[in-house]
Structures are given as C-alpha cells and as structure tokens.
Length: 391
Image (cartoon, rainbow, N blue to C red):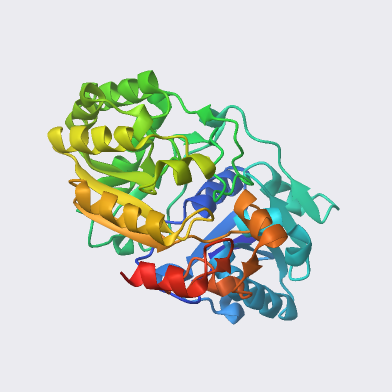
C-alpha cells in the first residue's frame, strides 16, 4: 500500500452557517493525487462524519481556522491517540504554530500546496512554504468525494463551487489577517481562470461559482479580460464575489460587462459610515466611492450586499450610529452587520493586546456571530458595542 492521507475540514463549534466548499483541502487533494498519494476528504461542516476507526490512511490533515481551532485540536488529539500521524494547516496555525504543534506531528504554514508533500519526507516539524509566484501552475482543485449538492445558501441560485483567481492583498486594513496569502498580489491569467470554469462545468455540472478573491476586480484590465473570455466561450453560469470587492476598483462600464458575463451579485466591504474611522483602520476608501459603486451596480442590474462592522477600535456611539444611518441610506439589497473580531495575527489583535482588553479567551467564540463584544479599547465598551449591534 502506498502513501495515503485523509484531509478533514472540522466543524465550527459555536454557530452553524451554511456549509461552504472547502477550497484549501480541494487544492491539496489535487496536488497529492497528482503525486500518487491516495487522498480522502471529509468535510464535517457539510455533515460528513469523522469515524476514526474507519480512517485507514497513514496521515490525517486538518484545516484550522480560529473559530474551529478548539474542535480541530480535540480531534487531532484523538487521532494521535489512535495511532495516526497528524498534520495541521490553515490560517490559525500559520500565526500560532507552537500552539498547533502540541496537537500535531507536522504543522504547515502559509500556502500549503508545495509543503504538503514534504510531510512524508521532511524531518522538520514546522514546514514553511514560500509564496507561490506562478499561481497558474497550481492544478485545479479536486472536489471528488464531497457532497456538492449541500454547498448552497438562501442568497444563492444553485449549489456552488469556489474559484480563487488571485492571491494576496496589498492593502493594510488592521482587522485583516495576511499570514497565508500575504500582501503580494498574484494573479492567474484570464485563460487559466476560465479554463477552470469549463472544468467545473464539465467535471461536476457546476451552475454557480463564487469568485472568492480578496480583490477580484483589483486589476481592471484582467477583470475585463476574464469577462470577455467567458462571453467569447459562450459559457452560461451564475457568479458572484461573496468576499467583497473594493468600491474604488469599479465603474459603470466594468459592472455592465460583469453582468453580461453572468455576475448576479456583488458584496462590498464598506465597514464604516464614518470617514475618519475608515482612514484610521487602513481601509483606504471614500464614502463617496461607496455611494457610486452601489448605485452603478444597481444600474447594471447586479444585486448588492453591504458588509458593515460594529465596534471598530476608533468607533464611538456617534460613529456607529453613522454607520447604521449610512447603511440605511444606500440602495443595498442586503446588509450584514458583524461585531469586529480581533483575530490573532492582525494589527488589531496586537493593538488590543498592548492597549486594550480582550473579553473572550476561547478560540471557538471568535467569529461566532453571537452578538458578544470581543474586546474593549478606548470608547469601545462591551455594553455599548452589544447595544449598537442589537440596534
């Protein structure tokens, strides 16, 4: 029997939202199987059960996000107790490798496509991967073995799969973690992107795609070229950008082209309705650009979602009220308000660690959408944040 591994996407502990296609482990499966390593995927978020007795592979790899860390570590400990070798990867372990190593034989930091193969040969316990510069060279994700019909939600038209057309984000928002893909912006070619669209349609019958880049429209010409390539090949599918596009990268003609190419929904990371707060958290956009982008998207016939954050570190009761009022003033179809989370590895986390006070010490509580404040800093007090969030 050759080398083998089981890749697991652990369940979230606190809240259960609609399961999301686990792109990271689908990429790893593609790399591993291309190199002759038998690979099985289990996605707990989609209801797949982890039965340790039935796992017959030599290695088990778990993806760890901050909200899933507690569950992932507990599962890793059980797997090791049952004699399995365990690899941990993902955003949380990339910032806290020593914590992760207490529960694992190997820890993979950053982008894992190259270093995942080293777990079978390297004697190192912590494997650091350099950023992959030519991301066209990465094979398309392998989604076989996953319950694809379960990846849907009330805001979508069909079950969907994800495509990431670029990696990295050059901006410096203090609440955003850059420890996996970095700030170095790397783009796939339009041909490579649309080749993957065709592959997902032919291989899996995919009717809807989420482009989950941090900055899908960062490079205007490339966005145009992707849309033109889709239109030229006469590909019919619905797509959106659920992670949010930057309002300062859009104009009416680009949005009309995106609509023609099948885009039906865009999310905008707006965050605050107060310009000074936006400036201080490093967002780098103007409120007027928000108004224009939302107006143009509506004009182009694209559904709009606005993301807003309550309890940013420089917020006051007045600025949070301005955010609520600003959201109401925009012709958005949907809005999502969340309480600001100081994820480990972000500038915000260090700011609170140095000058504020954490209110939560359980990783499972992070990103829980529970309505609880995570920290106190300056005018940001628990009672105020939770009251404004409810409002």
